[in-house]
Every structure is written in C-alpha cells, then in structure tokens.
Image 1: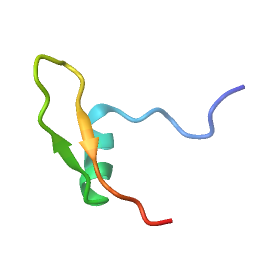
Image 2: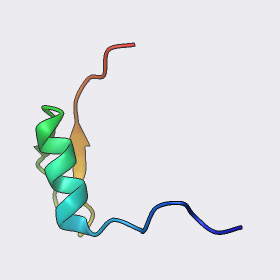
Image 3: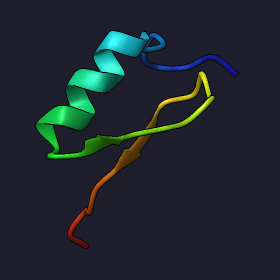
Length: 41
C-alpha cells in the first residue's frame, strides 16, 4: 500500500499554500502552523 508520490516537507507545503493565496494565521503558544484560505469549487 505504497504512495505514488514521495512525502512533502514543511517548506514544500508552505510554498504550495502561499501559491494558492493561503495566509498563515497567527497562533499563540502553539508549535503548529495554521493556514487560512479559500478554494473555489
């Protein structure tokens, strides 16, 4: 049950989200990044 694509690292995911016009939300006391955006469809 392998994957067809290799896993993405954090930098790659952030680049994709930025290119899709997502914005990183400010987060307090959390090590997890939160992103906010809209996808048509």
